[in-house]
Amino acid sequence: MPEGHTIHRLAADHEERFGGRVVRASSPQGKFSDAAALLDRTVMESAEAHGKHLFLGFGPLGWVHVHLGLIGRFGFGDGPAPPPTATVRLRLATAGHHADLRGPAACELVTDPEKAALHARLGPDPLRPGDDPEPAWNRVSRSRVTVAALLMDQRIIAGVGNVYRAEVLFRHGVDPFLPGRELPRPVWDALWADLVALMREGVRTNRIDTVRPEHEPGAMGRPPRRDDHGGEVYVYRRAAMPCLVCGTEVRTATLAARNLFWCPGCQPARS
Image (tube, rainbow, N blue to C red; front, side, top):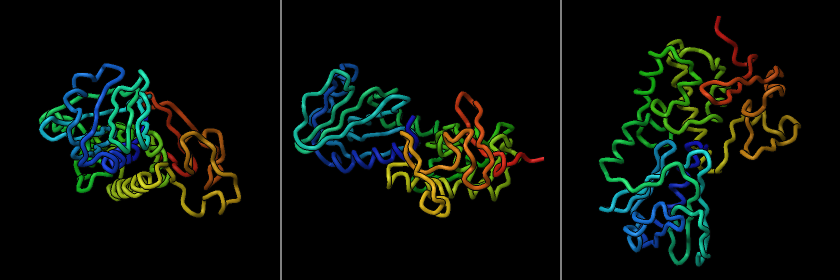
């Protein structure tokens, strides 16, 4: 499932291509036909993201709310759009650009109050300017649930997925199985600040890189990571491989139905 930086990048991509322009809207697949007919030949006024949710604004008509889920994706193209395939849930097009949405978990036209209700169910997003991390800390600091599970709870922090979760805990030496209420406040503040910086860089580069300069391939004389997720990481998908920092074997376990990765040498359990 795409992490929050990908959705914020998609919002910027839509804004750049379609913002303030009249668009043609269609649903070749048919599941969004009624809403697409309302949107056709209207102006897309804005685009924004909150966590893993994308919102495309069409003024008084409302907002197209998209959640990509596990298999959803957007494809962009320039110039006159070729005929769409039958798998396209939503196509937006102008004379110079088009975007095709396939396989989303959600694609719906929502009103302002419905959009507000969606925002209310989500925690603060490290990528949304002005989002206050204090409500997230209030929930984390009272919880017996592990920090690793709390970071993946979109009601607490919106946009953090499996990669950022594993990597930010490693970067700050936090035992992923530590209960939230035992996490020191200064460590929480450092985690949040690091998520802001890492995810902003993810938006800029459209990939996740979390290793510090001294641990990059060139500095360590090691080959670059080869993975369909891209980017240089410390522990994500590196189970049974030596830690880049201490050499301890990276471990993995299932937590809340997702694979967790950590280094027991750099992230020791608190006694």
